[in-house]
Length: 286
Image (cartoon, rainbow, N blue to C red):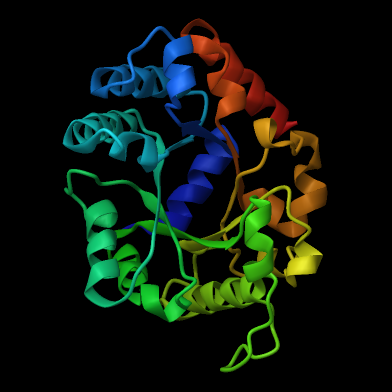
C-alpha cells in the first residue's frame, strides 16, 4: 500500500522540523552568488541549496517560474534539482501554482505528481479559484500516488485580499468567505479520500503568515483538530513575519505548518547558506 503524503510529512517534521527552504533563483541572487542567469547557473544554484539543506532541513520548495523563463534548458536544470533533492531524502514541493479545469488541470497534476515523471515532486501548489471541484483530478492522483497538494487559500500578497475575503453567493458554501470555503472544501476532501487514520491529511492549504485569518473567516484551531490540515506558510523572513509568531498565528495548526523561507536564507550566499539554513531551522524549532 502506498504511504500517504500526510504520513510522510509528519515523519519529516518530527525528524527535521518545520522549515521549508525555498529554491528561488532570482536574477539578483544568481549574480550575488557569482552565477550566470542561465540554465547552468540555475542548476548550480539549486544543487548547492539541496546540498546545504541535506540533513538539516526536511523540505525544499523550488519556485518553478524562475526555471520556466529559461524554457526547455531551465526545465532540464529543474529536473536534475528535483531528482537530487528527492535522492537526498528531502521532501520536495513544486511551487507551480497551476490551475485549470478538466483534462488540462489533470495534465498539470500528471506532470508534477506522477511517480517516475521527469518533473516528479512529492507535492505541488495549485490554484482552485475556479472551484475546489475543478482540481478533483490532481487531488485523486495525489491520493493514489502518495503525493500531496497545497491549495492556495489565503496568500500573503495584499492584492489577493479582495477576492479571498469575498463572500460566496451561491452553492453549499454560500455566505462563507472564499478563502474559508476553500479551506473547508479541502478538509472535506481529506475526510473522504479514505485515509482518515492518518493524523495529517495529504491535501493542504497555503495560508500566508502575514494574513489576518479572522478577516478571512479561517479558524486555525479548527483545522488543527481531528485529521489535521497541512499548511504551507509563506510570508516569514524577508516578507516580514517573525518565526517567533508561528504558534500565535497558526494556533493548533502550527504543529503541521511548514514555515517557508527563501530570500532570507538565500541572501547568505553560497558560503553562508549552510549556516543560514541551520540558524533558521533552530529558530523555527525554538
